[in-house]
Length: 106
Image (cartoon, rainbow, N blue to C red; front, side, top):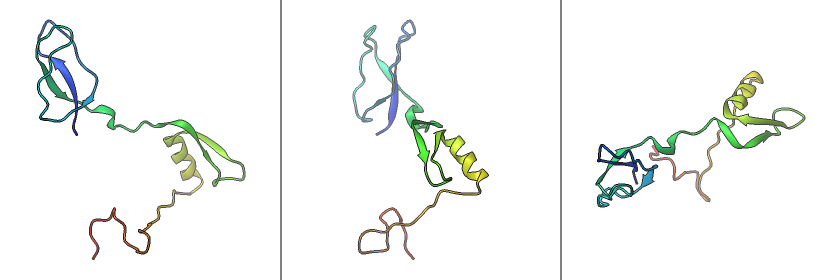
């Protein structure tokens, strides 16, 4: 479902909604402030992943003592300085080596 903002079409009114998820077929909604029609405006919404962690990341695999990181960039710099990288591994479905996330098998 697309992410929109609603904006009042009345030039005297400056009402704007926060982002909302709604079907494209939804009817035009009136402005809660002045009652005029509102229009949909595309928004960037919450698509950006923040650099900071909501809870600190504790990495127990880099050194003998656990190390706490508060941002992704801080963790990436520490990995690069230690000449390490996060291990990516393929995990297939049970009883098969194929993954439902892979679209084409040749």
